[in-house]
Image (cartoon, rainbow, N blue to C red; front, side, top):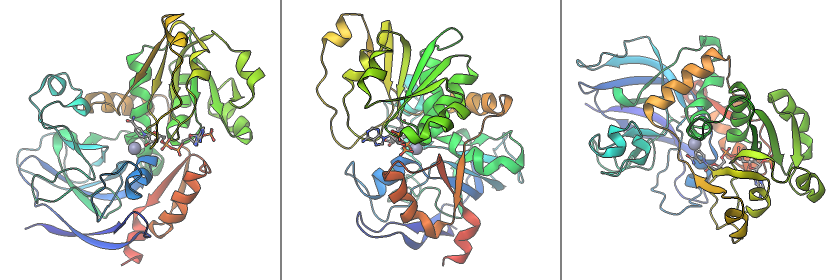
Length: 355
Ligand code: NAP
Ligand code: ZN
């Protein structure tokens, strides 16, 4: 019997969130049921709830930075037991048979495509999937992560499930390391995790920001300095010097200004997904120094576990502002203004007061 779950949903792109009741499937042989303790608030939640990318299915229950406690496991579950702390990120399933799935890169599944934790096809109950702004969730064990951090830090661990892996994966894939100069564009949820992780990987990190007031925070997070991206002289001083730039900006902007800062053979990887195109590329910025412009999507499950273990070993968590679920619309408005220090996390206990 599917179980009723309390949740918070957007019923349309332009209406506030409100209490909503949904159903979670019965716990199957490979499934893990999790009572959600905390859920991070990603800018992708905002893009989706407000249908900025189009294609949003309503009612929309976002949330893909989930940490909670296991309450039930199916007969074939070997990796988790009742009482464990577990995490769920951006995916809850994939085809399991295509080359990307075989390579452990389920986010690039070219079979049926990965199933998003929200706004994806629900192959069990029909309709679409509902995410972490809810009291519990049932997920196939292969898409559940083990959390090794201290239990007192769990709220600050939740954002690792998206912001952490989305920044760790490209830094890892492009093999950044000691002796390299790395830039992180945009100091928000993803950006601040990118700074912490790139610094822990032994690189020299600079933040590019539209917010001069974030300079001291950038340094505290592990950056050498913050470069105000609108300051042309400050930008010019770094021309041709970066090995790698991770661009997390959630709005369209001019990429050329950053490509010029890369060394020969340097790369800039885009993880921000604005709802409108960037300014046109000047091809010379790529060809003259054999530079690369790339993109990257979250990370596979194996790599997500590796990132969680890396963050545990380096004592890395997210800098968070805890909110009640009732505050979600105001939190979105602040996030849209780049006013978040540096990730909102919903204390899901507040859901009990909502219905
Ligand atoms: P966020 O917390 O809102 O941070 C984005 C930052 O971008 C802001 O804090 C701001 O930093 C900067 N920014 C915002 N508007 C800007 C503008 N007009 N011009 C220049 N900079 C601007 O968002 P997030 O949760 O980190 O997500 C960032 C983007 O990544 C979103 O588009 C999201 O959908 C996407 N995302 C992608 C993946 C993936 O797998 N590729 C995964 C998760 C999220 P400053 O104040 O420092 O300028
Ligand atoms: Zn996300």
